[in-house]
Amino acid sequence: MSLEAKRRELLELILAVSFRRGRVKLASGAESDFYLDLRQTLMRPRGVALAGELVLDRLRRGPPVDAVGGMAVGAVPLVAAVLAAAAVHDPSSKLVGFFVRKETKAHGLGRRIEGGFAAGQSVALLEDTVTTGGSTLDALAAVEAEGGKVARVLCLVDRGEGAAVAFAARGLALESLFTRADLPV
Image 1 (spheres, rainbow, N blue to C red):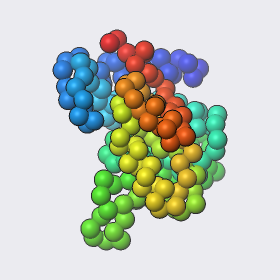
Image 2: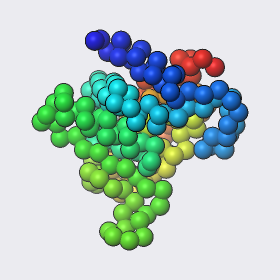
Image 3: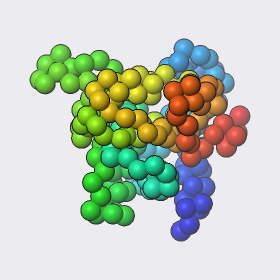
């Protein structure tokens, strides 16, 4: 199956199980006439497989990175999907994953970033859906504070409500598999 066919299949799944019309308050505090709950897509075998493969393909076509990660909880399934796809398509891949907590852990090793992250790495931040980009910008700040370099930001769906502008102000292009134009809004 071609990548374009896989992209179409993923969009169909997103629209079937993750897209809802109706007034909702978003994490950004803004109100919207539609809601995207991509956990519904990423917690299905076909959804996680398609998302992982398509994001991995996008990662291969740009500046290389050592790790993929993002803010807990939203980015965790997508990070795992990309790592699983990397294991299938390149068993010798050295790509690692991580997630960023909202706050530094108060016990154990007291980390805010968990997983395969290390200072000096070039990373791609992943997110399922972005609106303003606020949570991913928080992850970016945490990665930079720990000595990492954010090289790329990728999402499944860009709602088209300011995230691309926010990342551009930080010198980063927001790469998305789908945009608001792909949604029936």
